[in-house]
Structure formats: structure tokens, C-alpha cells
Length: 324
Figure 1 (cartoon, rainbow, N blue to C red):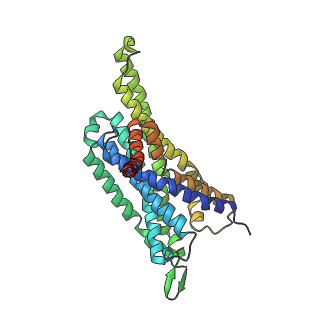
Figure 2: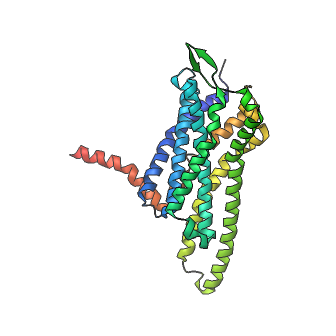
Figure 3: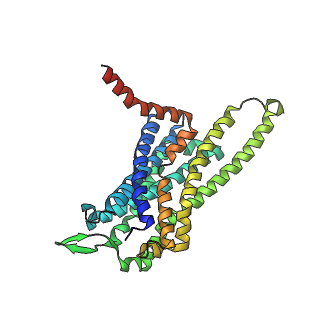
């Protein structure tokens, strides 16, 4: 019997995603850490944090789970203890990827719209403290996942596999925890990004009209460095947050329509529309963890130049060694 189409597509999709996403995020971290992209140190900290979280998503969610664990149920990764930690780190990595995008959006909102608060908030020390605090909270928030699963079978006194604990997922505490995790990873970040982008747009429109009025009609054809810098910052903000919203939209819609409990206990037909919607949403969701590199390269000239240098440097070294 032929494998369902959705499973065949997953067999191709996740290795392809890892092949591109892993080196892309590594290059992004390397380039941004060097500080030669013409960006402020504060925004660079948030962008490095986003790239690091996306790298963890590629490692745990895509490579370890979808490529190494799910297709090979008899490997050491299927030991129950290992399996629990994989689920735990999958949850924390995805949460950090989402919430670091929210932090990036908030930072750009403050930098553009809150000039009085900007000097206090948009600092490297503040960014590092916010990112560290949020990471610790996410790791603590996901701890119940370690107790939400149990073994599927025992072979030679060894626990294998992970299955949902019915008593946990049907208890009020378990249902509340699961809804809290899902809402805090989907609806709340989605709403915050949308809200802060709307507020930023409103502030930009007001400031642009006021600035054009102050400069007067005589200078309409002259360049405005302040407006140019603001334009570049806005392009970066809207492409990053817009990409996140578009790629997460299918996952959020399928979550709202299918229901979380059905997802947690799904054992149905692989051709069912609900299952296909959930898997499609997940694939697009993971795609969002490797698009930022393309966005930076497309919107930031200096990042693109640094990317070319990094890509060319190994070949330059090889040519030098060959000549010698």
C-alpha cells in the first residue's frame, strides 16, 4: 500500500528545510555577532537571539524529531527518557523563536514611537536582561511536558516510546496547561505583533506628516537622512513580522478550527482534512525559522555584503593554499 501523499511530502520537506535552515541561521549568528552590518547594538542582540532560537528549532524540532526520531521509532532517541526531553526542548525552542520575534517587534516600536523611553529600553544590557529572563520563564513553563507523557511499551526492562498520559490531558490542570501553552505560542504573540505593528504604522504616518510640514515644500526634492534610516528600519520590521504572521497563519487557523485536544490525541486517517491542515500549518510554521536570513539579505545591504564575504572566504583560502 502506497504511503499517503502528506507523509511522502514530509519525507522530502524536512530534510530540505534542515539543509537550508541550519547553515542559514549559523551564518546569520556569525555575521550579526561581528557587528559590521550597520545596525545598532541593541537590535543586533535581538536579531542574534532570534537566529539562535531558530537554530534550536532546526536542531530539535526539525532534525532530531522529524528527521531522526519520528521515522526511526527503534533508535536510542525513542527511549522514553530521551523522548521526553526531546518533546520538552521542542516546546522551549519553538516558544523562544516566537517570543523573541515579539521582543524584536516591541523593541522597534519603542525605538520608533517612544523617544523618551528609547534611551532606557533600547540598550544592550536591557536587551540581554529581557532575553535571559524570558528564556528562563519559558524553560520553567515547559517543565510539565516532562510529566505529561509515559512509555508506550517495555522491551527487556527498557521503556520505549512516548504516549500522552490520559490522566494528565483529561485533568483540569492538564487541559489548562495545554491550552495555556498553545495560546501563549500562537494567539497572544500573533495579537501582540499585529498590535505593535499597527501602533508603529500610526506613529510613522503622524511623524512623517509633521516632518514634511516642518521641512516645507521647498525641500521636497532634498534627501532626508532621518526619514531614510526610518524607512530601512520599517522595511526590516515589517518583513520580519509580516513573514511570521503569514507563515504562522495556517497553524493558528487549524488550531482554532480543529481543537487542541484533538491534536493531542490524534490517531486518525492520514488523509483526513484536519490532519493535513495541522501538518501543513506545522511545515509552514517551521519554515518561518529559516526565512529571516533571506529577509536580512534582501533588505540590508551591509548584511548582504558581509554574507558574500563569509561565503567567499573558504574558497579564497582554498585558492591561496592551491597556489602555494
